[in-house]
Image (cartoon, rainbow, N blue to C red; front, top):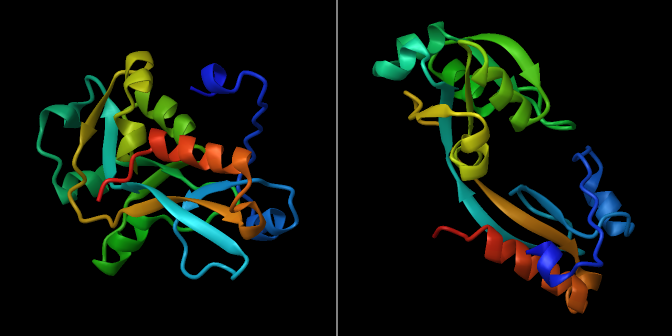
Length: 188
C-alpha cells in the first residue's frame, strides 16, 4: 500500500529504545507503534491499532504438535523468548508462570520475533509470540509452523500508534496514521 499510495515516501524503522517518547517530542521520530503503556506525557497522542493475544509456535513435525499442549509439557519444553531491544528483562509468560510457582527452560533469548520464528522452525524449541505474527500468511508460507494455544492464560496487549500533538493536523502524519489503522484493524 505504501508503494502504491506514496511511492516517493521513505520510511525508516528504528528499534524501540528506552527514550522513545523523548525522541518523539524532540521530532526525531514521527510515529511510534508500540504496546499500550499507562499514562502518556500530555504532549503525546495515541490511537489503538490492534488488540493482540498470544499463541505458542513449534515447527511442523514437532512431537508436541500432535499432542495436547498441557502446562506440564509446556514447562518441560525448551523455549525461545523475545526480549525486544530496550524492553523489559522479563516476559509476560515468565511472569504468569512465576505467579503460579512454575518455571520453564529458556534456551535462547532474541530481540526480534522473526528471529524466534526462524529458530523454532529449525529446532524442537517452542516460542510464545503475538498471534498476528504467528499466523501471518506470508510468514507461514516461508516457514511452516504449527500454532498452539498456550496452556495458561497470558494477558494480551493493545498495539497503538503514538505521535506528538504538534502533528495532530499534519496531512502526511494523518495519512500515515490512517494507513496504519487500515492495515492493523482494531478488534473490539
